[in-house]
Length: 452
Image 1: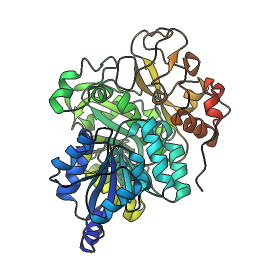
Image 2 (image 1 turned 45 degrees about the horizontal axis):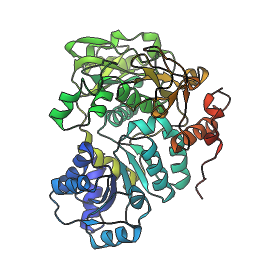
Image 3 (image 1 turned 135 degrees about the vertical axis):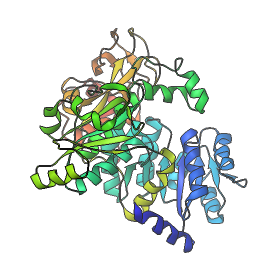
């Protein structure tokens, strides 16, 4: 990461800025545009795509730009890029197809739309930065397969807690300590929160109530930790993770004893979280070392006598750090965080309340479901429904509060790309033997087109 600033300064001096296309213009996307405009020489937001054009224009205005051009075709967008004029559009696929854009930054929090954008960008040989753990935790491994074939980088963003966790994981591993737990520090966890209970907090910070709810009800942290597991080779110690709660302000160095030691030391390690510890909202990695002299040095350096050593980053700065991810991908071919192979941890849907046959499931962070992290092998053996595929599904039968939904409980909507990609992911990584109601859905039998 120390190399990024120098590389970007060189691109600025050469008059060859890294150009990004920003998909989404919500709270976090506007922060990304502002950060690049104010503090990142050698990088430009060439275009912003958003369903509401005025919101895209707002992102540029907040970043101090007054001149912008509305475009409706690839040719018009390419002309704007050539002229150095920021562009806005309501069609994100234009950004994926236009020459002159080096990377797409996807910041919508959607799954169906984000999957379509990512795939289109990859097919046009553009790097993809996902500020979107939801799509990554649902179909990230198969999107990574497409990216590898195309010779581009697919990565989650630094600044979001998963990227910060992965930086810390790489540091700990790089000094010879074996990471056994990657963790997330939370201030609240209540699976029954909904947009009504979170409306005040969302309004205070100018955020979307459903997105805020997904933070509170555990869905977001489940996705975030799932993609860390998929990028490190780890799993979860149990469905939903252990997630201990400690008195507010407890130093993070004191949480190691709250996890079963065998869950950490036997196997590839786990992802998890803690509620109430400090410094929040940071991240932590617990590691071990088997060399007695190195353990002596770690004790001398105030990390304790072991067997677990706690490393932590006291903050995650979201949009401030996203440009570093773009630069790592475009200039160095390095992903901040990407799946190693197939999914190891999934996020499955649980009922937030009693659900009735005939109901149509609402979206992430809403009133009907919350997400739980589960090891993929277990999720497939039990035919559990990924929450990333749950929205729009119609219930075949009643589901009790807190029950985990299965494919047998629902009818999938027809024609969705995310379902086809999920099924392709299952087959590609050797999970096709898992019995799944999804197999019986005709739309999943249509293979997605291969990259040439």
